[in-house]
Length: 500
Image (cartoon, one colour):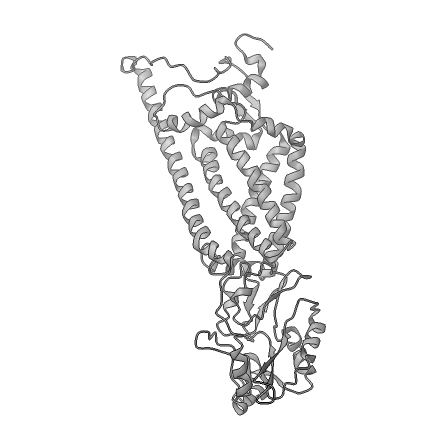
């Protein structure tokens, strides 16, 4: 079955009753039109002056280039009727499809803030009606039906009137909408109504630079991080073996050279102290794991929404599977949006509450001179190139502080751009920019998370910090070694001088 329409240009009188009926049927106001009637005058006065009316609408192309670059898959083809549709619930109003239509049959509705086009009144046809423009046309110049039904009125009209589509030598996307009246059809084509599809700047930037870069950088960072973590574990194990052998045979161990640590010296802490120190409040721990779970859910559903071939990270199989899992793309969009809104509504106020309006976090992420020295020396120490003690750190080391700053900025950007897309704020260009910013921010955070997870879960020496995010407590000796400044603040009785 292939629903389509044919228009007899010899009968059209340019009354625009079809335009009025369409506007009423679909609530299309000023600046929005699913169909139109243009008037073209040819020839000269007193000689061959002629008027041609061009009733335009979506051509229901077999190749439908408009569906290729829709970031959310809102533009699709109905598998049963072959009609090209725009799902309003999935459309975010970016307008990325508009330039891909050779006939200018798509528009951004300034009130609804979504892209609209003629869908041959599909919901009404499904219940046995004809499209509104067909019912209204006083000249009966519009014929609707099934092209695959040779006995139907549409197929008979196309054959009897030699109705043909508007195509040129350069552009032929196999439109199913046809026009009868050879002379008028040629006059319409002479007006340049058919143009080559143009990919939008968003598609060009995304497919030409952003996606290839993301596909390269994120896996590379993850691979390097995990490989580096495993190497650090291997080196730590070898050092432990040598140390144990040295304890068994002191003659094998040479006296270490004395080296003063640059930066301010670490506070002198007692070797013996409490077994554990309280590190994270229950609220912050719950918030941390809710945030982690939300990232996984939003990442999976967000990637599932990137259905177009030019936007799909891992091919179109995953988006199709996610769409089926949620019962269709609109349901997937709604789930992603509502979870994202809930995440933003919970994470921001709760974070500010637990961090005393942000004052505490500003103190925790403040970069000091010791932090700068640590950032330089830590990679060298992990590679075994530096033996001297590292500059003392606070509750969070310099790497964790930088990651926290990065995540705070990225999260703010992701929430802001997500709101622009969710509520279609601004022009189509603004929404398209939000798409690029949103997805690029997520890709950068994922790369950072690869390093974060590696440091927390892969490197054995750092795992107590991960465990503290579960239990709320951290081993005293681990904290004394990694966060001596913080230990001096929270456990003053552990100072060797016994001061408070």
